[in-house]
Length: 104
Image (cartoon, rainbow, N blue to C red; front, side, top):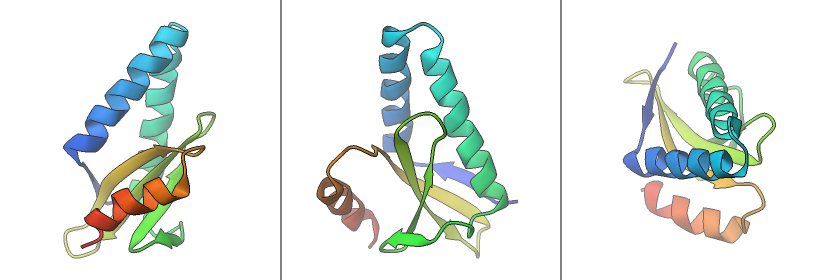
C-alpha cells in the first residue's frame, strides 16, 4: 500500500469543492469528500492501475461527481503524490498547462 501525499493546493481546492456542494445541498459536500477519499484509497492500493494520461500523471475519476484526480506514483518512497483535481468539464488545455509546471 502506498502512502497518499496531497499538495496544499489540492487540499484547498477540495475544501472549496466541499463547501460549494454543501451550499447546494446539505450533506452533498460530505458525499463528495467521501468519494474523493474512496478514489485515493483505491489508488493507494493500486497506483499503476490507471494509464498515464498526461506527462507522468495518471488520473482517477471520482464516482458520482465530475472530478478527475491527477497523481503520480513514487516507487522509491512508496507514495502516491496527488497534484491536481479538476472538474471534468474544464477545458483540457487549462489542465495541461497547470500540470505541465508540476511535471518538471
